Image 1: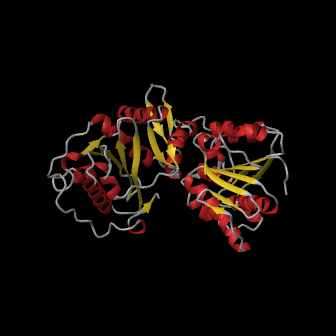
Image 2: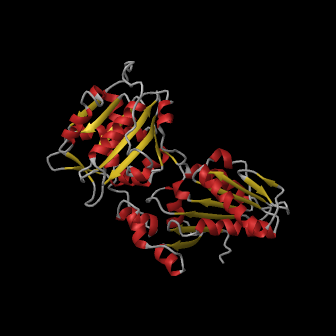
Image 3: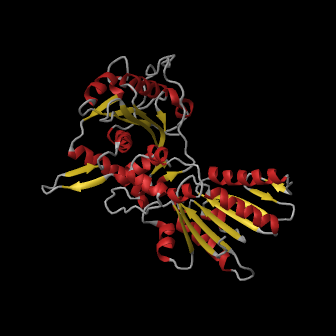
Length: 418
């Protein structure tokens, strides 16, 4: 067991490291009165850490002096606290052991480190710091510590190491669940992927995601107080597509709903889009009408579907440049909030901007990869800049919108992101 004061673990996903640090913290607190602090990338993950501690206590049939959603106090007075990673929540806490779980995925990693660092320098006792994460490009404090700080004891555990140690993981299944080889290298092989060619580097994306965001239901979409816009990219792969709804407030754009289809007929996709646009009163739907999208746009714009609420866009070098540049500006100004959705994040990150010899700009992704989620989002955001919100006619939403029979749960209608 590594008893170094400062440790960093570069690890593959889902190999049990969070379980290990939870157990280490629990055993430390149980054997000696201690203060243990866990910081996680989101509130949900911080609460999962507390649940792991409770599971250990149940095995030991141990009572608590106090048991809250974010803190457990053991009979010997030890405190185990788990919090989401914000500098404001961590600034006032000191601990004997601090664990930064999935540190590369913190929205404000440097601010959090700055907040906890002074507590580690107090000389009343030796205090310990363990930093754990999968990589997220060559950016941020996690990469800086791993690459440049000799004061840390370093551990690298990729998927092959985990399997050799008995972890029950199937590599073929892991590869099937990530969008491309770059994502696999990062999520399972512990590689810090170079961002030099990325038009949306992680440093640009990360401050704009909300790890606690969820996919809005119809009722939640109806309750939005600001206008909704949607983008639909019928992917080049047959019977595939991506549908995105955003809410445009006076100061920010929020991704409220995403749907990805693979191997689902366009008829079912259009029924889903029509139902969601009508039920939530989307102001404008923008669809890529290039190629196969031409007939799809005609169907969506028909009188008995969405009519003039459906707007087609022909993808050209200039129209794509306008849309994607506007989207990048939203990220630069941190005026957009997206869910931490691995497929969306990786598609943004792997999009490349290529300037040809004649000066024509092209956006491309590597062969075998996809960018449909990016263009669906870009079209939704283009909708509110090109078509300001209008007052919806009273008869826009029928008295009763009939939900098509095959629009049910995620399993019956393609793959849900959430």
